[in-house]
Image: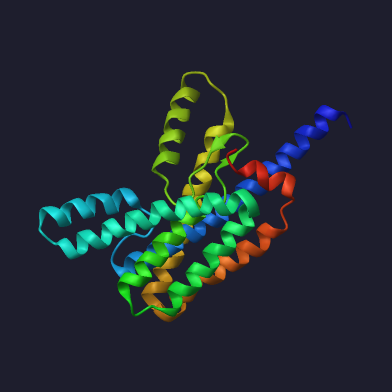
Length: 224
């Protein structure tokens, strides 16, 4: 086997592992967002929606809701920052372990709407630092608007003659989030008690799997 062929094989394997991790994390994000929306009444990863909801609450003089949503936006931003700090030292599995603990804490306080909302939203901010790119392609984990936009633009270039298959990578997080949201909404609808702990269980499994990823691969999933 030539050196070039071996490098291509390793890159393909690394990309496959990275995309599998992206799909699993997006599934977790979609599940958590659906459960949070149905249980708490607000989004826990869709900050565009919460920004609009905060603006509407301000316009309607519903200041208590507006303050909660603005606090959630702040928690999301801080979560992203904390996630990057953790990832810089402990890589993806460190970020996922932190998220797992946050989801466990949110399950313990299901009757406290505001506390649960902020814990879930902080966790979803943090998880974005687990994977930031796959072979140089930017990846969103808890939001899919950017991914769908990149897919749409890539599709346009493909129609114009470009033949890069990289645009299909952007559908991985969207598919994972859709599947997770369906699973989360179904659980919350029929087994609300189990739904409170489901994100924690999924996060624990994903964390365990991420520990098996070689360091030389996982560091390439992060921006440097």
